[in-house]
Length: 83
Image 1 (cartoon, rainbow, N blue to C red):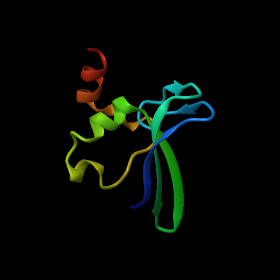
Image 2 (spheres, helix red, strand yellow):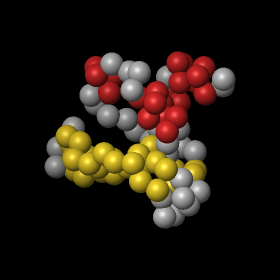
Image 3 (cartoon, rainbow, N blue to C red):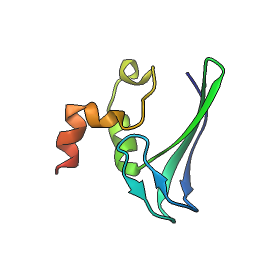
Image 4 (tube, helix red, strand yellow):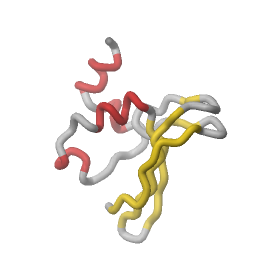
């Protein structure tokens, strides 16, 4: 997977976070990512909480990318989001 774009944006319409599936309203600052994997382009929006959690993971845990809502499968994420 090759990341082409990663930037912080202020949303102009509601978006769901790719990591936690929560919907965020217009005007929310989110991280926007565009990637290509085996010729397939994909884009996603990430909330600040999920992006912070991603930064704690090792490269071997992130190298294959994530499916929608995958961060909910990490016990560490679940524990941190309950605080």
